[in-house]
Image (cartoon, rainbow, N blue to C red; front, side, top):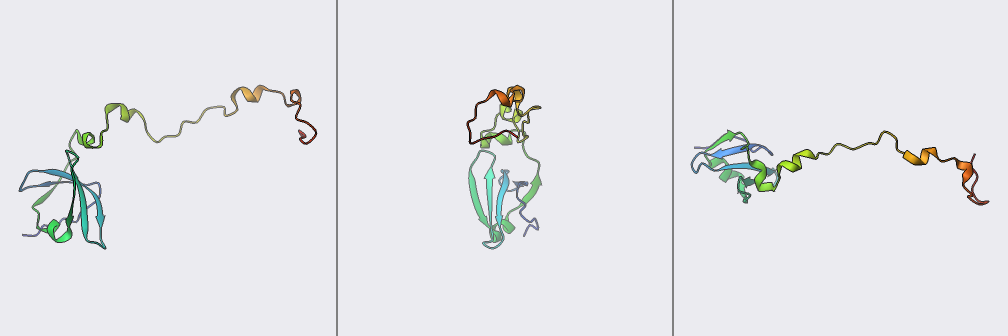
Length: 109
């Protein structure tokens, strides 16, 4: 019996025959391969014909899914948001330009 599930990157699936839970991490349509990572961190690859023979069910990500990626609770405190200071110049904005002797090659206009 073929499954009709198309592999979707970042989606979790459960192999109903073995009970194992895994995430699809890559799908190459040209090579017809599906790369996956198990909850314990083990990685593997299926060819598309093998994928279609698996007894699969879509699944929710487990609560501790980050364990295989070595994420910790502290990692969640950091994100990709840029930290922008309110005043880029800081103390430099308070300096008066005429206090600097920059030589003859530089003029402050």
